[in-house]
Length: 470
Image (tube, rainbow, N blue to C red):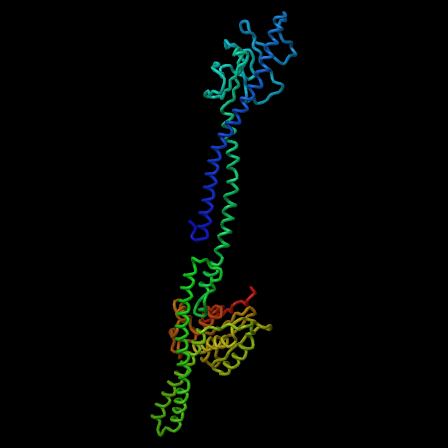
């Protein structure tokens, strides 16, 4: 049984059509058998009634010739042959050419003596004459008639096997269209059902396409009446989810935004306290407070970015060039000699649908993550973070360092999840990039070791295709 409703409808409707056709063939076959029997009987009766006068004339003429003294022997060139039996001679009518003889006849006198027969007639097939009309034997259908007050009778026989063979041939030809009807019916029904199910499939595709970045109502135009209650229920559920998520994102964004001003003010006061502290213990305590406030400021910034990433609207109205954005960002973040950035860009523009601001947030978090957890700050010649953008919109950010176990890679994309590292951070950078990648229609993949290396870590972001292309 097909899993889809479309397949089930096509299968059952086709089987129903085939069953109805088979029933129609059976009923038509019964009617055809009766009609054919009537036609064959009519032909059999017509043959007997046509042959009997001719046979009577032939026999009378032959008797007159015998009375005139004719020897009654046929010449060698005559097409008829004569068989003597007692005082009466039976004439066997020869055929002009070989053919299948479905009707055979036998002409007899009142005593049952054979006077004339067709060349393939077998006397044993014909029962004794019992009266005018039809009769059946095990093998033949026979019509009998009489002339000259019953002194001359004729019996015309047709093999029942000939009738049955003709009936079978006609029934097979009647049922033969089933061989074509079944596949064409299946294709036609499937196409009709597919067309009728088009709105349902579009509605299903709309449900599948919805996610955290798009909870808009699904169009129900053309949807069958039976599916309208389901469609309304789904759209109401999407509306409730949208309101709930918007409330959560609004709370997160507003909270992070409202925290920026008091955190900045507190940080300024602590920095002033560090300068004006009367002794070193007080100054050290003030620096600890300053560090905590800076960490809180970065966390509030990351929360704002996460709210932006999960809030949708990550695709631009028109394709934008990513090259200038990445060049400016790499120049800004590579100023620190302890964390250099090696940038590789194509000569041609790289167009993508992702919003440039969202792409900048994504790239900044990937580069920050590589600078924080790589080995760029070790030694006199720190290893740079390698950043590259290909012409097909694939961003790669790789750094050196120990290999991250495979079971930890997927966990790194969760909010506040951090690997086995002593470096600082909130654990939100990769979660933000994952949310932006998903919301913009792209993909994010983490690899360790990095491509072409035995160690290191690499993040690969592929921007989604531009609408109307590949």
